[in-house]
Length: 75
Image 1: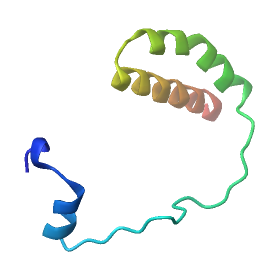
Image 2: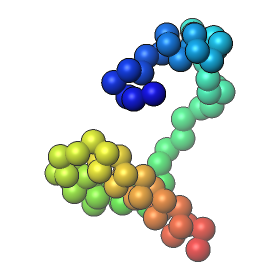
Image 3: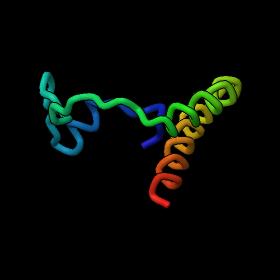
């Protein structure tokens, strides 16, 4: 199906799907403070991510920063 023809109602009808709304998808987990490493990486990398001008590039760069922090922490 071309993206231009995509609609949630059509997919629900064609595949006999139902949607569940007003229900939490994620478990109730208390927030935690970001690590020093993550704060440092984001403070250095966010200006570049914001300057890219592309939502996709911003998202990918922020994810890469998080992955780099994880790799550094895991050794």
